[in-house]
Amino acid sequence: MSSFIKKLKIKLSFKRWLTRRNIIGHKVKIGEGTKLRDVLLSGEIVIGKNCKLKSVEIDGRVSIGNYTTIWGPNTDLQAAVNKIVVGNFCSIGRNVTFQEFNHNYERFTTFFINQNLLGNDRHREEIVSKGDIVIEHDVWIGTHCVILSGAHISTGAVVAANSVVSGFVPPYAIVGGSPARVLKYRFDESKINKLLETKWWDWEEEKIKNNIEYLKNL
Image (cartoon, rainbow, N blue to C red; front, side, top):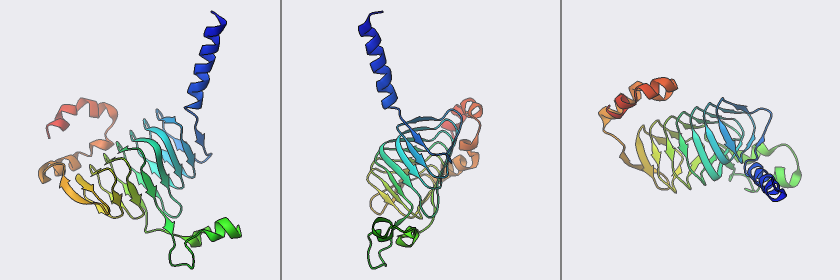
């Protein structure tokens, strides 16, 4: 093998390493088969099995179910007061922000003065939260969305690109806008109820594979 080929192989291997670097904190738990690429994970984070995360930053108390994909770049989940919960089989696009806390505008300044000027540990006084962010199962969140504290997005829902969600989204609703509102539903009430009754997102992989036609024809 020529020296040129050897150098090329080394260069390509190094490039692949650079583009797949991950920074993972010691409290992070990652399920079997999950693939990570260019992620920063810090805090009490639990990620289920067979997930795919690319160019994502997660901080705080966050749990992610099985088979969920979070595909950046510039997608982040930030939890400082309460927690963020994401279910199974969810699809989250690029440039999506989950912001579980916000600046406390009832203080004399919205600037994080304790953290950035006084250097003390009273940062909790500077932020407010309306509660957990809950994303159930089979939820699709389009690009450039913001999900705020207190948001609860139910199973099967779709959030259109460039939307801001801060409240409750019903099962299988398609929502959009700022603030997000229901635009339509994916299916009629009968089919929605049938899908919810199956709870297919909790099935084992083999059962899903064996019942694909059944699910398609509900």
